[in-house]
Length: 247
Image 1 (tube, rainbow, N blue to C red):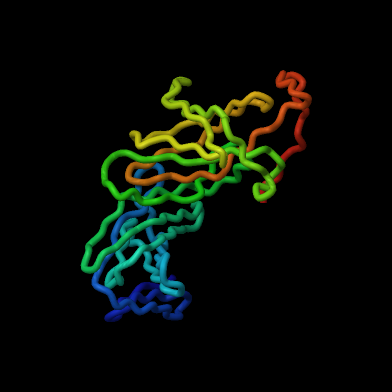
Image 2: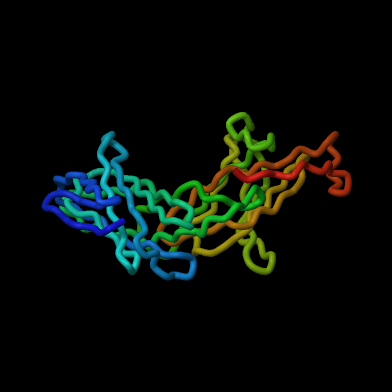
């Protein structure tokens, strides 16, 4: 990246000396910031915005040294926003509605350092912007039968007891999965949590790494739970699984 230059009616970025510009012809704007888990702005993170209703409409800017970004001259519509930076996991925010002439700001987006977690840890799929502002958030997920990493072939499980575990092993919420294996917690204050899943005929499972973020609905990838052989869920008789390999 050798620099950034603005031209009237378009956002221009210079990649290896080549200008990439996307024309914009609206009246709205969208702004926010990108930070890491310590609250420090992620300098020069890229932000890519695309229309959820109009294919081919995309806009791209780069955050400044403090992690602040801004899209100008946007047409009204519904958008998704993607952030990325070397060394961090990419993040997608959906459901961003922008009206004509609106100067919209969104809550700070937090990027997680890229790690080689290989199962056994909650993995965020995407965020969805909540229509109401405030210091509350929502957590959504689902539970499937463990068939390796082939989620498409894994059926959902209804009636799984799902608990939201706070600090000091305290249960802050409890629900059951619906017929499609889905569960939800919130609206509730933000924080870091472990999800505990239990159902007759399956091994219980504690999965850490879940977070409720203020102003967002956090959607996580499915949890896979393993059947007990012949209905015997004694952990001492649990077959050992081969080691997992991260891609």
